[in-house]
Length: 258
Image 1 (tube, one colour):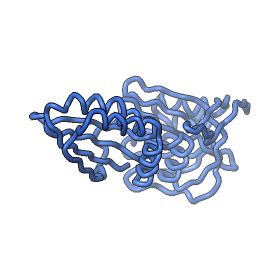
Image 2 (cartoon, rainbow, N blue to C red):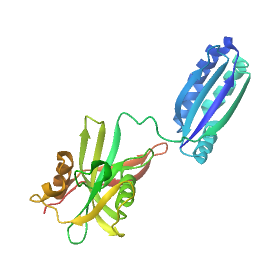
Image 3 (cartoon, rainbow, N blue to C red):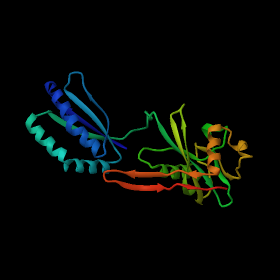
Image 4 (cartoon, rainbow, N blue to C red):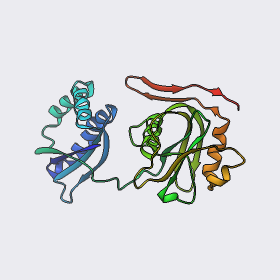
C-alpha cells in the first residue's frame, strides 16, 4: 500500500465551503473509483487541511486519477469551483509508505488448509506461538487478497508446499478474537516440506483420523475444523470485482464421502 498526503492552505472563512465541496465532489469521486480515505484533518487556526488517501500502488493511484479526470462528477466539480471562486490558496502532495501495520482491523479474516498427499496423509504444522498443538497451515488474509490467494500464500510460506484446492469445508468465527477462518481442502501439488523461520518449528504429513487426532491437534477449535474437512461438504465461494463486474474465481457446491 502507498499513501498520498494532500495538504491545502486555505483562508479560515473558506473552511465550510471547502468542506462542502470535498464531501460533494472530491470524496465521492475518489471512493467511487477505488481510493480509500484514511483520514482528514484541519489545524487549530483553520488555515490548513490535511487528507491522507490509500492506494494499492502508484500505478493504482494513476489509474484512479485518470478515471476521476474523465468522470462526469469531475466536470461538475470544475463548474462548481467557477461558481464558488478560490477555495484554497495553494496545495501540495507527496507519497508515504507505512513502516508497519499499527492498527489491525476489528474483524480479521484468516484461512486454513486441510492438505493431503497421495498416501492420504494430512499436512500439519506447529507454530512457535502455539507450540502446544499441531494444526493445519494457514494465516491471516492480507488486504486485497482473495481467500484462495491467501491460502496458497500461507501454505507455501509455512511449509514450502504448492497445492491444488478442492473447495471450502467450513467457516469458523472466533468471537473472542474477532477472527473468522475459512477452511479449504486441497491436495499436494509440488514442493519439499520444510519449516519457516520464526513461524513453524515442525512441518510434516501424517495419517490423521478420528481415532488419533487428539494426539496431534490439542486445541478444540483446530480439531473441529480438521474433523469437518475429513468428510467434506463443499460450500460455494466466489471472488469478484465490480465496476466493471469480473468473476475472479468460483468453487461450486459438491459433496464427498469417505
